[in-house]
Amino acid sequence: MKDDRWTSERLPAGRSARGGMGRGEMDRGNIARHEADRAPGWERSVIEKIATESLKEQRRARRWSVFFKALGFAYVLVAFLLASRSGMFDLPFSAADNHTAIVDVKGPISSDDNASAARIIAGVKAAFEHENTAGVILRINSPGGSPVQSGQVFDEVRRLRAEHEDIPLYAVIEDICASGGYYIAAAADKIYADKGSLVGSIGVRSGGFGFVGTMDKLGIERRLITSGNNKAFLDPFSPVKPDEVAHMESLLADIHEQFKAVVREGRGDALSDDDEIFSGLIWTGAQALENGLIDGLGSEMSVAREIFAAEKLVNFTPQDGLLSQLTNGVGVSVADRIMGLLVTLKLGQ
Image (cartoon, rainbow, N blue to C red; front, side, top):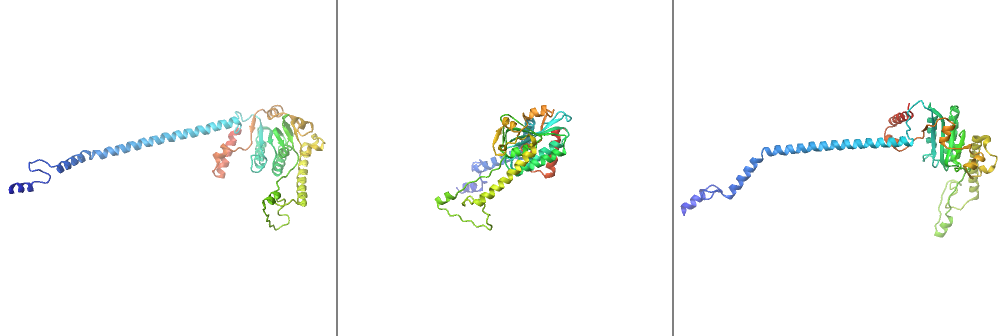
C-alpha cells in the first residue's frame, strides 16, 4: 500500500497509474493541435477574405455611382428635351432665321408672381435686342393686378419700342386680358384677341370687410392707439368714417384717370368715344373689336405668320424650374455666366 501511494503521487499530472493519459492532458493536446492547425494559415485566410469583400464592396459602390450618374444625366436630358419641346429653350436649327419673339404675361400681375414687371421687362428687352427678332408678341392671359407693376411695364415697353423702331410689338390676348392686363396691352402697336376672349375691365377697385357688428355681438372691446388721426385709415374693426371713404374714393379716381390716359395714349383714334369703355365692364373679343379695344381677331401664330412673316416662335419669357434649379445656390457671377451660356444656346448664336 505504501509503495502504491508513492507511485501514484509521483506520476505526472493528468496521467493514471496504468500509464494512460488523463482527460485534462487530452483536452490541452487537442487545443494545442487546433491552434497549430489555424496559425498562421488562419490569419492569412481571414485577411484574404476581408480584402476580397472590400474589393467587392468598392466594385458595387462604383457600379452604383455610375448608375446614379447615368440616371441623373438621363433625367437632365429628358427635362431638357421636354423643355425644348415646350419652348423653354426653343433651339433653332439656323441662327440666321428670323423669328417671332414671345413674352408671356400670365396670371395675376404683382411683384411676387410670374407676371411681375421685372420678369416681363427683362423678356421684352431680350426680345428686342436679339438680331433675328422680326417682331415681339406680348401673349397676355391675366385678370389684372397691381397698377404699379402694370404701369412700370407700360412705360418700359414704350421706351424699348421707341429704341427699336424697326421691330413691331403686338399684344395677343388668350382667355382674358382685364384691368392691369389691358393696361399692359395698351402699350402695344396692335392688339389681337380671339372672338371669345374677355377684354377690358378698365377701372380700379378696393375692398375689405367690417367686423364692428360681430365684435359688438361677441362683447369684444376695440382698443386702438395711434399717433396720427388717420393712422387707422379704414380699420376693419372700427366704424366707417365718411371722410376716410371720400379720401379712398379720390385715390381710386386718380388711379382710374391714369389708367384711362394710358389707354387713350395707346389706342389713339381706334378707341370708341363711348364712356362705357372706362366703366369697368368687360367685353368679348368680338365686342372689343367693335369698340376699338382691339385691332383684330387672331392668335400668336396668325400674327407671326401673316403679319411678321416669321412663323418660328421663340419664347423670351424668363423661366423658373429647371433653369433656376441648375443655378440655385451658385454664386451670382457664375449663375449669370450659366444663364448667358444657355441663352446663347437657346438663340443659336
